[in-house]
Amino acid sequence: MKALVLSGGRATRLRPITHTSAKQLVPVANKPILFYALEAIRDAGIRDIGIIVGHTAEEIMAAVGGGERWGVKVTYISQEAPLGLAHAVKIAHPFIGNDRFVMFLGDNLIREGVTEVVQRFEGEQANAHIMLAKVPNPQDFGVAELDGNRVQRLVEKPKEPKSDLALVGVYLFDSNIFKAVNAIKPSARGELEITDAIQYLIEKDYAVHWHLITGWWKDTGKLEDLLEANRLVLENIETRIEGRVDESSCTDGRVIVEKGAEIVRSVIRGPAIIGEDCRIEDSYVGPFTSIYNRVTITGSEVEHSIVLEDSCIRGIGARIEDSLIGKNVTVSKDDGRPRAYRLMLGDNSDVSVL
Image (tube, rainbow, N blue to C red):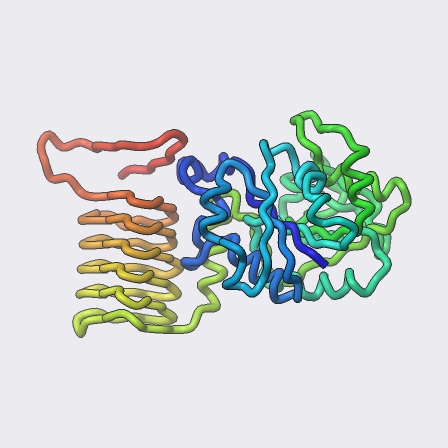
């Protein structure tokens, strides 16, 4: 089998972070989201991976390279515009050939990975296999209606869902999917929808099976889901202290302090991770917080947040929480006069003030 990982798209719901960075490279527990997908594919025994790239291609390619760190071979496939998941399958045909493959959306996190479903697909006669998860808000997802082991119907964001089974961002196909993606027409939003392609297979009596995941699943396209994914991953870390924690500081619970980091007169309450070459001074870092590399925090409190590399938080009186702070950002208290909020914010920023 081969794998197809989608790493294009505009990620409008995570702007302004994604104006300058690929959403698939935003770190969860200090590891880019895309890397979790590549690890899951490798762990399923797949070694030949195609990655669909768009306007952030150079950044994705610089981060992933040829796949050597995972022991896989990576081929990059350029998509000129985000024209839909089925379009991504269509342009990947030269790479896939006649092989069976798993398609993995690069901003999805699945706790149980894909090993079990890949093994099932390899051992059965299905033409397609979809992963499903029970959700409380099925109207926000593509929803599957089932008939025993087969999928009867797929409906994209139904107003009145007939089931609570949402499509997870992982799909398995044999070569018949290429008939489907070449047969369907663009949707009202101008994209070739993968749900339409799978529905085509269903209506042509191809076997479309399903797998219900038992662990958690997160599509990290929104801030609240990204922070929740960060929380869920941090729940499973083990304490590791490679940096320096001075005698006036303490770590409580499961905490990782990477090499080169310094914790000075501060409290780190886990689960939390402090990246390489960070400096945390006279501060508090609370649970479910990931501080990426080379961040400086002084005289401040941060909790349930993600802070990206090379940022500085200084002298903030109130606690920062439920936040995503991008690269090279400075957040500081200004004691100058006249007193005022002084902001330099990019497009689509979201700020809450006291």
